[in-house]
Image (cartoon, rainbow, N blue to C red; front, side, top):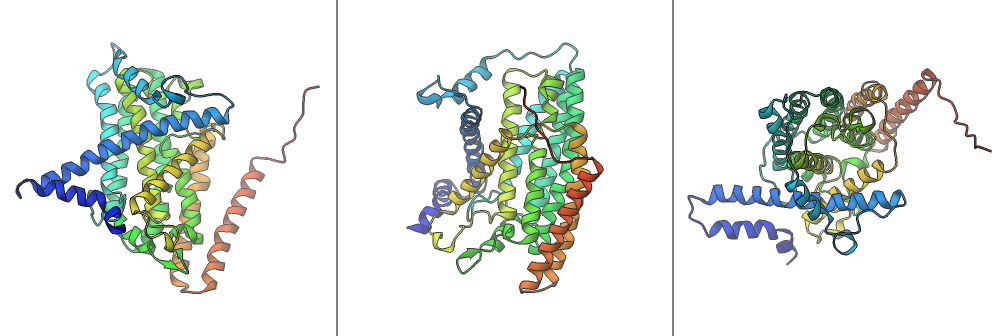
Length: 391
């Protein structure tokens, strides 16, 4: 019964495919998996938007959506209808073809990333040996779509926002990739399925997740920072700085095209959260061995939604950075720390089993972090804050 519940979607797919002639079964199996991805994640997008608006309203001491449906739960449906019915305005001087293709390229690229993310035991669309490489290769095309949107609009605000976005995404894509290399060095594989399976082990009931090692914890922090910037989420949402650039690279977009950009941003959050879950949080594996009976897909989506909640929390907490702070942080702190983490992984691998590698690897990352923090404070002349209140 437990294994059936865990594999219920796999069994359902095989049953439906088995109803067709053998010639059509391979194509039907792929089509069913694609339909499942295309249906599930947009539904999670609608749920997440509602959760975010409610959560931010709670943090900022306001109500949030509360008019459409009981407690405002039908607000995503109203938003979808509004986006579909609003007029699609294209500037006269815009490149109409590129202007039309930009949001489509973004959404298609993000959907392709889900093809290699294991969402449960035996639940992955394409199990390839280089799935991590495929994920980053496809992810790089999102930068092209952003630049297409800004350039084709023939608008200075849009072009400036696109240039900001591309510079930011390229800068943080390097530490994002390097933090993932640490996991590849330990696992010895670029397959996300094998990376998850390598973490699906337990000692005294506790999992062997990568985040529970010194190099894994440091790598996860760097990955989380880079992923937040890669998805243009606050406090790294400078490409959409409304106080400076109106709406950034999609200033000249309206109606359903704007909704596609909105959808692409949230799907990017889901895909990067799924990747982080697979690399550092054990993927679909349970947090304790005695919870093996819980279906693997529940653990995966639970971890992804927890990551999304943290991103929402960060958005409602931290202020936006300046552009120079953003770039300096990427090249002068995040990237050096990820490179040092690769050395830390090598030490972890070759020091062998025992307490010595825990002490050495923890000390390396801790000393480097403290030294970088103190150097930055001294260089920028940042001291203790003092507060004055109006009398």
